Image 1 (cartoon, rainbow, N blue to C red):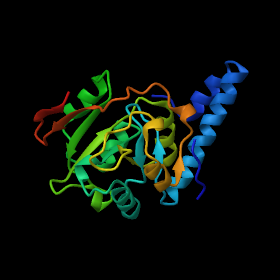
Image 2: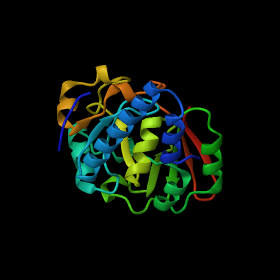
Image 3: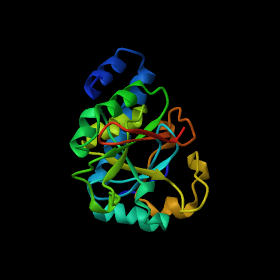
Image 4: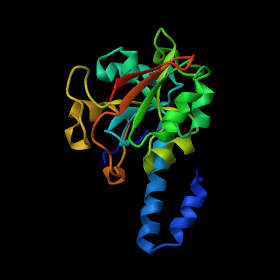
Length: 217
């Protein structure tokens, strides 16, 4: 593995970009190339340090138990509730959560800021990612790099804060410790950071029967 610091489909987005200016075309090509490099690392079972719509996170294939275990070791934590997954769409969510109530998807659709939904009935993921109660934290990120990465990879990707357990959560790449940077297989180029909120998302838990509980505003 190479290690380095640094509603429309993807083809439609690239065609739209090509209709704009040469600089936009170059930037789009660079973004797509970075996505492809990142996805290759994920497919090989690697762990990545990458930007999201909130803060920089550690990630891996959410179906790969060995990769998930590597993140636990790097963070020095076995807290499954600190690990959520990013999905490209609601269609992807329902492939890995089979008991989520309809209201959860309505709330996620209406959210105007990053929202993590705790949903019941997690299936098809690494066993060491799912807590005893069988729930799963899910977010559909409003973030260009993440959207493209998730579409290209085709499966959920783990997202957890890029820090040792008990230490402060770094908002930006410059705040991530050397131990974390050295412990991953690939660091996404920060030029693709976009405009993150630089703070943790809201969290709402949904019960199988439609119960709603706000965990973090």
